[in-house]
Length: 119
Image 1: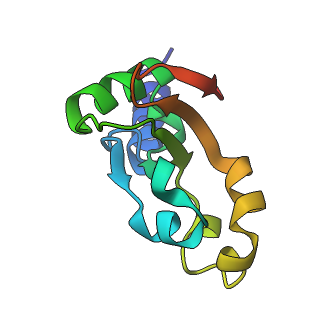
Image 2: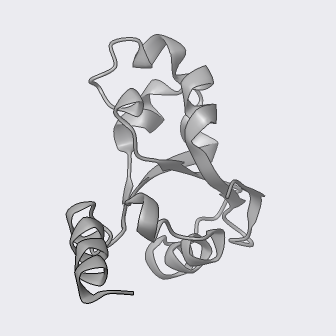
């Protein structure tokens, strides 16, 4: 492979964000939209295609960053998209259907293993 082609690939990967770290954060606004969320908590996983975390990495993140609770809770990890932000004017009325398209991992608090893992 020529140096030019290697350089071009590296530049393309850099510009597309493959060097960015994955961000996982609690999406409280989604918990508020979805009815009866006392037993659920939603997190957004913001990453680029090239550095998408595996379910194993999400499980590890949850063990390190989410405090255990005294009751059964389900954690939903959704891939970031503008459709699950307030930019989508239908979010509040259609969140239950919309969120299914973005689920990466769902787990219970007590075992922290994805029972639903979309790859």
